[in-house]
Image 1 (cartoon, rainbow, N blue to C red):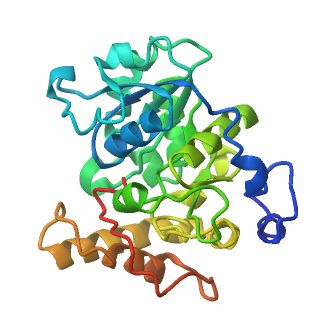
Image 2 (cartoon, rainbow, N blue to C red; image 1 turned 90 degrees about the vertical axis):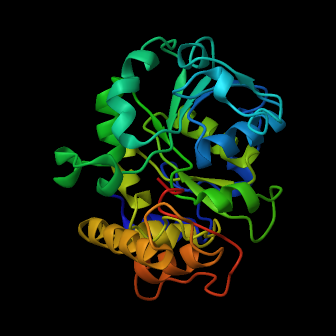
Image 3 (tube, rainbow, N blue to C red; image 1 turned 90 degrees about the horizontal axis):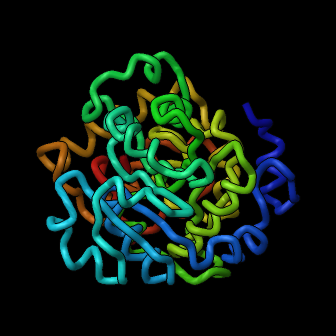
Length: 303
């Protein structure tokens, strides 16, 4: 577990080698420029990542489970190429998996076709209502570590802690005071930095959230999850997370979304998701832009 004082110091921009790089350093874009990227999944998050990363100048290939001919022109508008899943992970620098967590075991054989040096980024979250029960995660295993075991290779955890509408609509140029931050966790510091640079390319501050063992701090139910915080606010949110409380808060949020919409798949109104997440997930005393009404987050969008 990470020491809370580390995060608090980072919040004051005290540099720490393990956690929380200054955003002026972590969003240079140099490591993440002109990369070859393969994306598997064209749901809410995957579609936006495809458009944003291709528009940022990266060579993007994208695949879904139904075949390249079924990927719509709007997904490819930034210049991405529709391919098969096997082609998406072949000869790329980064492979992004934007699929439900319960499909990770099935995609493992496809990922095995990627070069050993290919960086794999995972955007998934665990929701029992969708993914069925995963006993190891229910028993306390960190979601990213479970994914690593299923794939047989390390991953970078990124873009899992932001709602799809916020990802699509709230990106801003680097340096803005209100730019939303997205936590990025990985065991390899170089991989983590590349993940942070790519997050910046999508319009958000990439925040160094440390190793995968600590990525539970950005899982559903955590104060940093889908609450649209800045780089100055995020350290306190990460530090204040309480692992034992996350599953209950996650499930309460799912029930609230379903009650609001009448089912578990319809989006609530544009501000409800972020407002509810801040109320349910933040710890007492945690600051945040409570008045913001710009985003829409739905459980199906933030998984």
